[in-house]
Length: 393
Ligand code: AMP
Ligand code: MG
Image 1 (cartoon, rainbow, N blue to C red):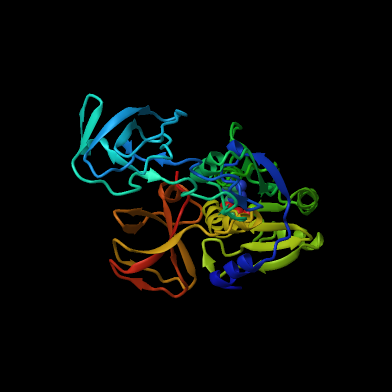
Image 2 (cartoon, rainbow, N blue to C red):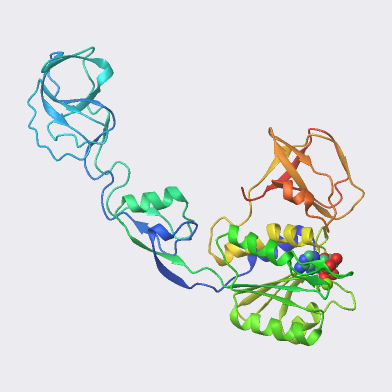
């Protein structure tokens, strides 16, 4: 059995060979990861731009200037300003080459075609110089950057329409268990409604991935082997829920062995999710997630998301972690590493009730997981504890 830290190290150090790229339109590239750096094909801003509403003037040694006309955003007006003359100008408009400063309208008194300034102006005020944001040919965003709305807007403001990004991995989700019934069916005694396929699919979708196949299989070695073989042949990542423990009807481990999947690790000294499995066969990776719904989801956030981010070539792979004061004392008699459903509010974190790995009720209200490393026993109110922030919803 390995520690949480060792398991995460295996995930981080795995050298993935998934490098497929594709060209996509910028307006369809939210959350995609650049596979090539982006160089600016033009200066930004493309011309000298006024950053304020006011007057663009050619400075003289007087405080009075004649107003020759006006330039608003989008205009292509040409004015040749001699010293002592100016134009009315608005934010975003092109400043004439002959103007050497912009004075804001609040600092000016206007009288018909003349203005009087309060003070002698400094040169080059309130002007965004051509190329001051980025110069033609300079590197803007680099390979491995994930595109957020600002990134998309920045690329589009450079006039770029298509970009190269890494392809998303093809992910298959498989749930195992004789007891599972799909919603909408009558529930005979002994059966339960299946929920892990939805948990995993929704978690993947929050990361911009739609699973290509979601399959449900009974606890039976042949069926498990057959479905797993097909999944390995057609996916980059296979997520299996349940059947990975040591019960007589847990067949996932045996099926993976029979299919010659190479184990990277099995069993992590943690709660929930001790029987977590991670392995690979050729280029396809697989997680065997313990079937209790809260264990599946906890392992998904802590291990699967970082690995998916690796497959996506995202340079930040783990969910954001930091240390936050706890709002209450907490005692644990467990020696293992603990992931506890929690809520951060007012810069403090509170561990929620109902931590049992079979229940999702506390997870549904959580915005963080508190991570207590193994042998953390007694925690006092206001002690700093490590938290993993769950994706925002
Ligand atoms: P297992 O890991 O297969 O031993 O399952 C552990 C517990 O999780 C059992 O109580 C299962 O009934 C439950 N479980 C397994 N798979 C699912 C699923 N897909 N949806 C809901 N509960 C599940
Ligand atoms: Mg089972």
